Image (cartoon, rainbow, N blue to C red; front, side, top):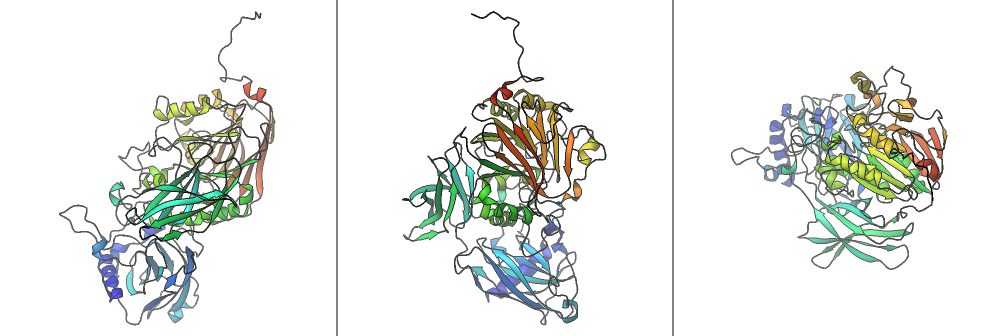
Length: 616
């Protein structure tokens, strides 16, 4: 009876759901559900096994689908729906005078029926393995004919579920507002009226303590527009953050996520561990990975991002394999490209769990997280799919003063990182400009010699064709507003995403190289090295280089990759660019200098001096 009610809900919904086409890079928007027709076929079937997932505590598991149809076509496809029940009872009307749609969410992924079945068109039968993650609800699978543009629903499967769909999952570490504080953020299906969230943690092998977590959630009314507010909406569950304080630098701590149920029982995650951050100025080996625009991909080859982000899984794989040599990660915007389809955020946090559960995973805001017309974003585009920053600001912790303004500073040993929010005004006189100057000016370069500026859009230098066509070779107004600050406070490296390629400049100021060296810098740089590192996963086909040869660009690569900074001590830094497909280094440079080299004056970096020479 339950399956028939679920089927009825889906059937009616398929006739009413509107097609969300405003975000062309999101493959889920290519399914024209509004054109779907009901074509139930007694000879068609689809079955899913096993019925219960995660019996041994797993939050990710493979399932098998078996299906058949009377008149097979290469356009037949399978949609994965969660929750499995799409009845009208879970839909909310926009206002009392309208009737709600019956189907409230789009499929969370899809795949063609002949994907692993070359004889499908002849036999009409096939099987498919898909990977599911624990997303706080059950799943059902629908078989369609007619392709993505004119789908016909011919069969629907049984329902399957995880043993505990509400389990605490996908921890994400982040630096707190103090250097000796680590935050742990995770997702669960338990609200505060059901359980008390906390983290049990302590030094490895020693007595553990408990720290309570703060919890939050949000509803579809916090979204700014479609599809996030409509077909892309999916209940986010509850997001919890615990603050682990007074950590000893560089020591290893273990932790696990917990929920104390009000009946006295406990729900636990597996055990994780992390190494506490070094104190500001500490001289030790410190290794930082930085990239933008990674997005997500599916290990099962499902089509939602298969063509758009072929490098995402490769980047993730390389980081996991080299995790023992990584201390902190910065993902500088365009995080998962959900574009208003909220289910993708769970899938992304699952993808990065092996990384983010072990080392701090810091984010910056990009256009695909924040931008929406009339929402206060600096750019009046629809790139966020109606999310207008809500998902990024809640799914990840970052030590900003205002969660809606994703600019902040964070210290890691010998590094000071100033993270800007390019989706808000950064120009001179703005609130963010004042923050940037304060971040750059307050660092003690004797203790923290390595000063790094991070942001999503390229505010510095890029040879990308569309920037070149604008004549700015960067975001218009970017350098005009910030370059004097970078020069005045002697920023070593500025790293950006947004452009899906890799590029490195010479140390540069006002379009002029201030140092002719390319790979081994000694002494003062006299300018800032600008790097574009937006090729971590998103398609590189839309970020071709201009044919104009600029004097400041010294290395370009049109491929997926990421960068790594290694500080050996206060005087020696190694920069490496690695490709995601093999993890090998394809570009690098070293900086060797003393504190006096940072103090040395260069153009526009020091105030005027007096002519007086008398000393007493």
